[in-house]
Image 1 (cartoon, rainbow, N blue to C red):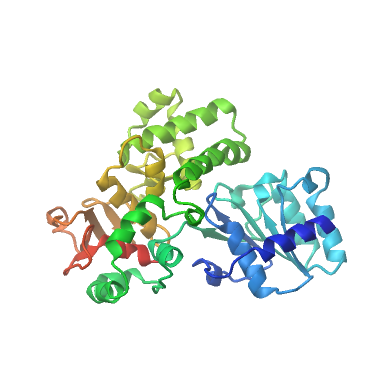
Image 2: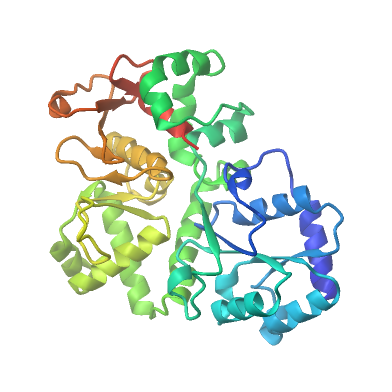
Length: 397
């Protein structure tokens, strides 16, 4: 166990507290068992270590371990926890639980056997906490960490701290907000940068190699995470990668499942299952109408990539501007709001607001008959009446 403690202390020492993510203060860390899920590269490990550094400075009753270390090839998690608790351990932080066989069963046993132990664990966004072999639904409080918002990107890139806005703030006060933001920074140039490389925190390591690292992240998500969690064979993995590539060239894609099934040589149901897996991995966003009969095998109305950076990594040519605009909108709004396919316009938000997304000259003819209708307009710093700058929707978290 000593070598795990040394590795933990080294990792903690290197963790910077300069910038913390939006989710850290939103978590109730007092719960007995917490899961933190998110896409590869979204910053789960860093946030975990930042919380430890903030809440448990020089506290020997706390430890962080990653379950993909060699130690757990020959040792069970239960035996490690037993030793930790016997040495006064009270707070256990586990990283990469999906790399450990039977993780859900052992976590259930840990919860049931150690009443005074608090556990926080991270895992892939693909993890189905509530459908795992051991039902953890009554024991675990789950939080999901998304990639950087445009607001967070400005903090990472420029050191500019803007307040988190609500959707009501934006709709009612967008002109005042534009004046406040534009007094500090010209958002349009930074917005273009964000669309290309601002979603994953690892952009700060190197912008030149960012897209290559993102491609590597995509491959690992499919070839390692999806394969392990869903117990896929290699033939299915190849079909999923082909499906993602095909969709990337054509997003936003008006779903024709029969055509996609023929292209990747899979059944209709397999295509729908693969798309659901990719959505859970945060690589796709499936826009549905929101009917009460919608299920996992319901065909989506439109299919988007999970974020705009994926387009720059996967699309062969320069990504189409309209696609980037719509992808940004659904990606940022979808974190804290319900986004559906509307009867007119591009998006229906919270069953109340209809949005059309477009460029500087975009009119509102398509949505003029809708109540609470707005245009999210790209290429402008200031809006007017029901026309709101698109970049502003990146300040929601």
